[in-house]
Image (tube, rainbow, N blue to C red; front, side):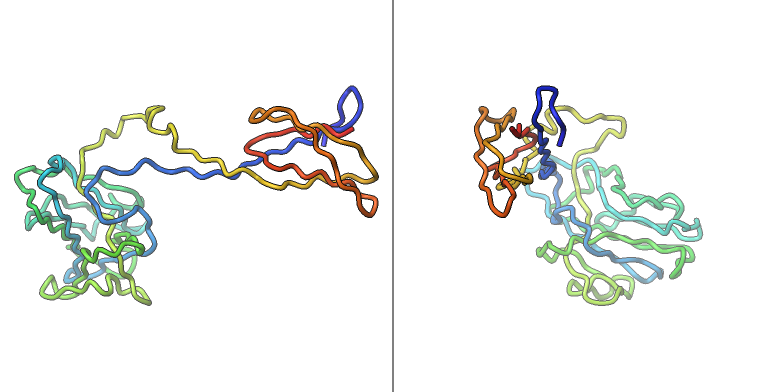
Length: 251
């Protein structure tokens, strides 16, 4: 509440409630990007597998992406190996994957199939701490194309994808798509129309004593008069809606 030079008071109403929708990913994927759980590899016999279906009409992917990480203190005693359709694509020293983020691997287009199997394993000397690798799971996904093995791939389970307590099911955050440029910057059109403001409604402003009508000013609507209700020595102004910003000029 600020006093105006001409007398009276001005109540500034600011609403910061909004929703931001990320642009939908064009990647071939079964996950929605929500990392609700994890699976991890701490033994050389353990495996994580993600199956990705490539539609015949889809552009040929150039890259494999996965959201995973090693321990913040991981050493190079462990190596993380990623294979596609039986061929090793990349081997990461443990210290190289400490950041929990999307990692990208180039994919030879002649290796792609209508049904593609991505398998993660660890080599070297993995252990419970600090030399393990974790892959994130979207627990809201229900396509059942992710699997876990404790016997080097002899048998697989889709019902529980992790040795963590409880049942971890869903889809691993593993995708096929176009290669990205790490130096690229976002364009304005990437964000247009993605922000949705949730207006504040029925905002009550109260002042002591019996007061007269106030004027509501907002960049989103014409000026309007707000008449208060007076009860128990308090005047209450009910502002119908504040999308982002409004000023209530009290008498």
